Length: 196
Length: 196
DNA sequence: CGCCTGGATGTCAGCCGCTGCCATCACTAG
DNA sequence: CTAGTGATGGCAGCGGCTGACATCCAGGCG
Image 1: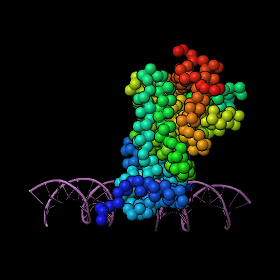
Image 2: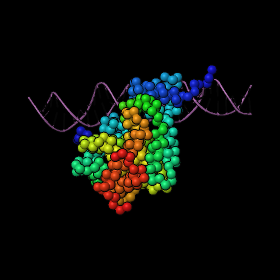
Image 3: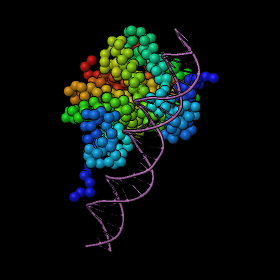
Image 4: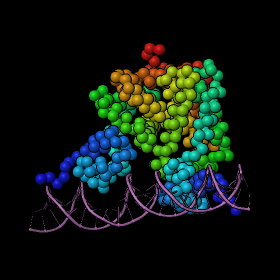
């Protein structure tokens, strides 16, 4: 006889994803999720601050992966190069085996605006954290913010493509990042930076 | 004797901002907002899809301003140049007289995560719309998405600075946009685009 | 062996966001 | 004068979420 089945958060996450995928997010009650794994609604909200959050747990690890990438960049690296290093680091967080699961999860998010809001919010938080790390390296405030947000933009676009195509996230990130540099170079030629 | 006081949405928005600024967003109920202008909670939700939305009404006009800027760009303009044109157009949407009101509104948003989520969501929607407009001009899908999101990033950062400093949004946007080009150029020199 | 402590869970009451449904109440077109 | 018409009110009800308190059981300790 055990006090309670261990791993309550994980069981809740798994059950939630399955129920959301079949019935839909709004048509699924927190009490239903909890009940399906032998718990109560109250316990659900003890593990997750709100109903949406059950789909966004584990992001802390992704943040760490990004920060590891930042830390791994040589001190001489320019802001966007540091961000590129963080992107390479983050790519390892999504090996191809993870694609099926990510696709299912994303299909749930794509069908619900409230979940899309939360997803963007998480990306924004990530950008803010990376920007802080850049500032801690001595990068100027504006440059840090811009580089971090641009990096997260590249990450977001790359992730979306990684779900559709069968290429590795690292390859896609490289391509998207390169395209950003190309677009900027193209604009620079016509609209040269005034006073540098 | 009139049927009802006209301008219900505007009165609700004004009252909501005042109440949120004094009591805080979560400490203010929809019924209180409605009651303060002689309406009921039910009517509040007829005008605004949810409680947060009362702070984000009128964004449709900003979207149009962006699209006007896109349309005004010459057909030969590169994607990021089109976006720069949209940014100049959008700057006119926030004349300096508007700064005090924007500051009050932003202070409310900054104090509440749920409102920050909604704000980012609106920016994302804006980026998606601009990307669609770019694609309609014949811009490649990846380039359109990247350029649009980068433009919205520049807009977001510029807007934040516009609230703090006393310079015009147009000036700030130019500076931030230029800094983005500079950062990209700096990265390009060390990390040249592979196959172009 | 029995007491005690602590963390995870259960129970319950209650607020508030939000919605569907129907009634009301001017005002307006005919 | 009558039949709409559009904004509003009233009301019931669900679900998200929270605070307060009780319960339960493994492990430590005497």
